[in-house]
Image 1 (spheres, helix red, strand yellow):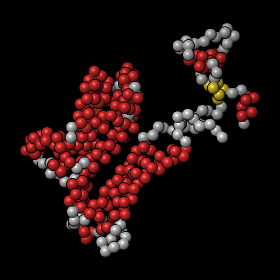
Image 2 (spheres, one colour):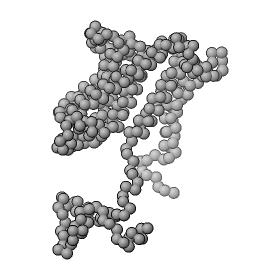
Image 3 (cartoon, helix red, strand yellow):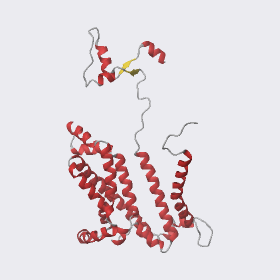
Image 4 (cartoon, one colour):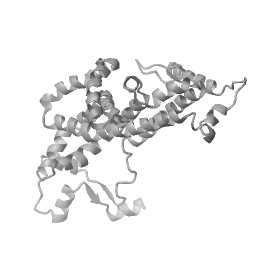
Length: 320
């Protein structure tokens, strides 16, 4: 029997903790599903789910589809705001103005520290001016949502910038003649792919689930539409809420799969070559070539500088 690692829980305890945490998440979802399957006359059925796709009830659920369309539009606009404005600004501060990093950290915490209803009080005069200048379309709500998602997007992007050592990579690219646009798109963005995907997921989830700002600013979004619909048909409102949770969970799984670390390629080493034991010594000598004896030929010098040397005839026959 193998000895257990000190400080590490036993497998039985680990399974128990995972089961309890899974039950905490699954029990409410199962309860929501059970509620949507209840029939008005008693029993269980799928009539409430089928009603969502019934063309005869399109007028009844018009506010729901309008709110869903507005929320998806706001998610796209807010995501564009994060990628086209927030991301270049965060990178600029991280690379060119590191002294402003602490001030930016404190600034991005404010949307979390200040309650949403207080933020709406500050947004109201701004939206009054925006309404007079550009109209009161639902797209203007993306500006307020940009403030709400800023703390989460900022933390996700900065974590990747710090781990990839962005300053060193940017200086190396600049020394090779790359412009700042090329550095941002071809050097920084690929290195922060996981952070950008996490920021995109958080932005979409926050926009689809936000209620306070849209309700107080009198805009129709998915959450305000669900509130209106729940007064006349609570079964469909709960069904849409459950469906949105499942969709967000699937998107989370897809993002975690796409944003994972690249897999190592098997068979990348050539079959007809073997590692050169002299290569680490040569590389560790600050780039200085090792001593070459007078009897050494050009091929022996090449074998010292190359990490791979060709196999001999005997070794090739034995490998086959």
